[in-house]
Amino acid sequence: MGKKQFAALPFRLDKSELRVMLITTRRKRRWSVPKGSPMRNKEPHLTAALEAYEEAGLVGVVATRAVGSFKHRKRKGDRKRTMNVAVFPMKVNGQERWWPEKGEREAIWVSPKTAARLVHKAQLRRLIARFAARTERSASSPLSA
Image (cartoon, rainbow, N blue to C red; front, side, top):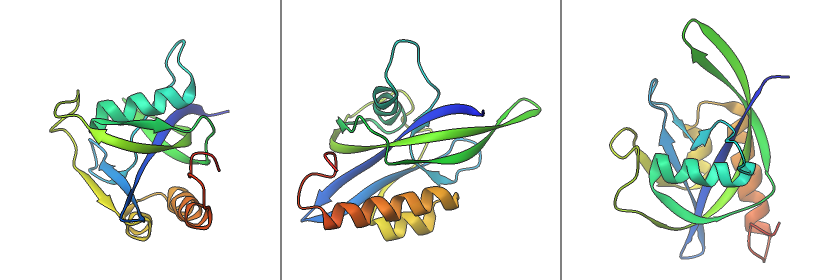
């Protein structure tokens, strides 16, 4: 089994339009979502929320269940590892003025269609599209779906 990581899929509703936030990776500057490795004594969804804060200053409510996962190759020195990244939707309530990685990444709010076009990973692209379709169909909050 590959190593695990946990990611947040930050979203908000702008005038009832769903928007998602993408951030750039530090090394290759590709568009992705905030993600990180498991933390001792921290549940996966809370790890995802902490990564969203550290990488983009986001605060909000994160779902306790993942909406899916994608594979990600991570380089550690000369070794490459395949990571299985579980993705948790996060309804963003705001963004702090300062956060640990401020200035190290770019961040943008975009439509799910644009997000799916910009992200590098095909599995993440499909996950965003599925989340958007389910959210737009759902009359309730996407976090309860």
